[in-house]
Each structure stands twice: as structure tokens, then as C-alpha cells.
Amino acid sequence: MLGRMANNVYWMARYIERAENLARLLATTYHMSLMPAASGEDTANWEAPLRLVGGREDFLSRYGEVTPGNVLNYMALDLDNTSSIRSCIRVARENARATRTGLTTEVWEGINQTYIELEGMSYPQMLDDGFQEFFDWIKERSHTFRGACYGTLRRAECFAFTRLGTFIERADNTARFLSIKWDMLTPSGRPLGAVDYYRWGALLRAFSALKAYREVYSTIIEPRRVAELLVLRRDMPRSLVACTLEVAGVLRGLRSQAMCTRVCGQIHERLERHRIDGILRSGLPQFLNTFVARNNELHAMIGREFMLVL
Image 1 (tube, rainbow, N blue to C red):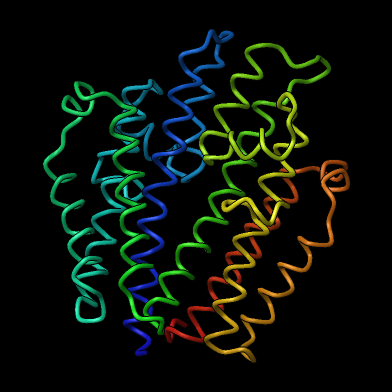
Image 2 (tube, rainbow, N blue to C red):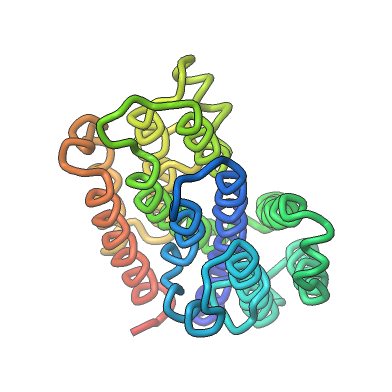
């Protein structure tokens, strides 16, 4: 597969996954904002999406004040924000169009239809329809994309690079999101209260992990177990271990002796060797930030070895 086409397919999948992840983050932020909050806590809650994408300075320069409406408009529909959901879908569609001949009709039409509907949407319309309905629609369109890829693409390089893009992006999001939320949600020197349980439940819902948590642990929500589920559980689709395992398998199928294949194997083995208590003792945010840096290195190596990116 030509490097340029591989790059287009890879980024197409990354941006679709990124749009879904942003919808999940905004949904949980919105739900948390409905709970009673201490002075300044609601503002900190709405700053979390800006911190995730590194867009706080740009946001403040154009919107001035951190309010739910401003953040939702900026993160969902603002085309001048290159990290907004609308921008992600637009770039995903551009990458899909650039490699249209390598995609099936179902994959292309799914992305194109999402783009057309989102281009016609405004903030007042999103407000009227309901924020949760909008977030659910974005997640549904992302699921449709992955289903079309899995169900219609030939098991060759194009399919492999959609998987690579999806799981590299998903691992990055899980690590960044959990790192940002960990200190915000972990109470200092006091037991968990009713509001804390609701917020941890909202975090699990952001990863579609609340049902999985109940099945695995059969107990009340504990931060330690939330971290274990999202970092170290192989059977949790959005955990770091599960994502790196998927990436490692794809890379072995593409080029087993490539440097990026070996590096991905090292990242995965390091995760497998850890236990959650050791991670928490050394500091979960620090561990997650180190993972993000390693994941970015892996992304750069994939670009150099497969996509002719210097």
C-alpha cells in the first residue's frame, strides 16, 4: 500500500475515533455539571475538555469566559477549533475522499453522510435537540463507521491501517482523559460520598465501562478499581492494555521485524508487568503521561516506517 494512502486511511480512522472520544468526554462533563458543585468546581469541570485537547488559550482568546455553552459550542461545532468534533469529521472525510478507491461504498457513504448532516447543524439546533442526543448521535456514527470497516473491508493493508489509527487514538484518549480526571475526582483525606460515586459512575459511562465494572468487581465504585479496569484489564475494550494488544497484533501482521513492532511489544509488556497498587504508589497521572509520550513515539515510528513521514 502506498505510503500516502496508508497515511490517509490511518488518519481517517484516528479522526473518527477522536470525534467519538470528544463526544464521550463532553457527555460526562455535561452530566457532572448537573450535580451540586462547590465554588469554582463547575468551571474546573468544564475546563477539562479544553485541557484534553490543549485548546484553553485559543478558547479564552475568542470566547473569554468558561461557561457550559461556550465550551460545548467550541468543542462540538467551532470550525476555527481544529480539535472540535466538526473539524474532526471534516478532516476524516477529506482523508476518506483522498483514498476513495481503497474504501468500500458503505465506509465512504457513512463518513460522507455524517459530514453532510454535521455541516448543517448549528448550536441553537443542538440546544433544541438536546446535548445528550447529539453526543449519542456522534457515537452512533462512529460505531457505524467501525462496523462498516469490519464488515466490508478486505483483510488487507487498508483494513489494518484503520485498526492502527483507531487503537492508537483510543489509547491516547484513555490515558489523557483518565490523567486529567483522576486528581479532580479523587477526594483528599475523606471517604467517598454520594456525589463522588455519581461522578465516578459518569466517568465509567464515558468509557462504556459501568456495566463492565459491575460485572468484574460486583461492589461499590472504588477509584483504585476504576483505574485497574481502564489501564490493565485485557477484557475492557478501551483499556490501555487492550489497545496496545490490538496495535501489536496489527503491526506483527504488517511487518513483524519493524522497529515500531518491537517498540509496541515493549509498551504492552511493560503494562502487563505492572499491578495497579504499584502504579498508584508512584502516581497514576505520571504513569499515564509517560504512556502518552511512548504512544506518541510509536505513532511517529509508524509514520516513518509505513507512511514515508519524516
